[in-house]
Amino acid sequence: MKAVLLFGRGGWAWALPAAVLVTASVACTASGSGGGSASSCAYRVEYAGHTYSGAEAKGFTLGGKLGAATLPACDDTPGDGDDGQAAATSTTAYAIKGVDPGIAIALKDSSDDVIFVNLDSGTTLPEIKKLIRGS
Image (cartoon, rainbow, N blue to C red; front, side, top):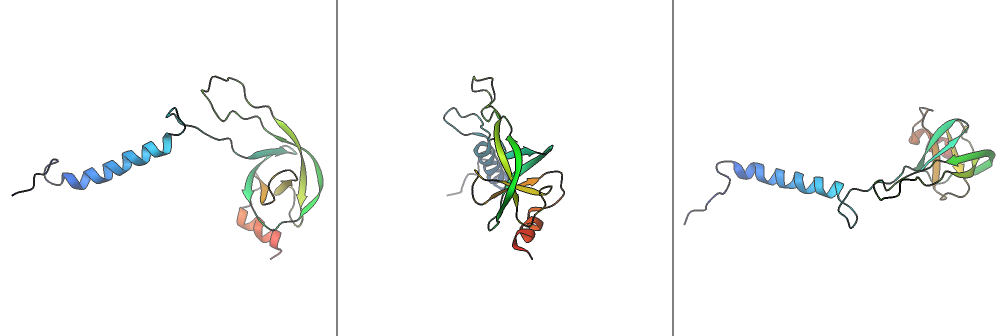
């Protein structure tokens, strides 16, 4: 008995990658019960005219109080029928011992392993971790 190939000569070589690609595409876009895509707002804070993005960094020591900071408004569920954005939230920025506040700051009410890196500073997280460790 001869096997019958449904895709013709060499068709199986293309069928498997195509199936994987379609599955991966659906997995990346579909979420929630409605099957639509969902997003989440970036963990950001605005302080002293700069925007800082949240990043994980363990072992830092909270320094002195710097001043008022803002967690920007966010609409992480567009198309949910609610046209408004969540309101901006006021908080307090703190220095990180051994790190210039122009590079990174911390929030007392955020997780113990999250710092906020100034997006304009040009400093990478590994460089900041070295500053925190003092090496």
